[in-house]
Image (tube, rainbow, N blue to C red; front, side, top):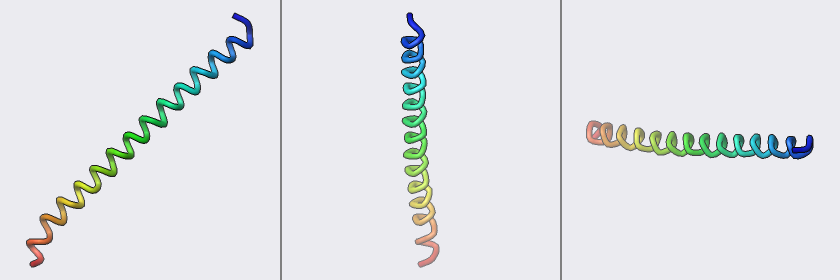
Length: 52
């Protein structure tokens, strides 16, 4: 393996790592959003009957 091939291999590894990281963060955000809306819905369901 030449020096350049070594550099390309490590660049690929770094890119792969960043893609995984971005995908994981997106999933966390999506889950957080779903959780937020579920919590808000639950609060509304509890508060609405009490208010009326």
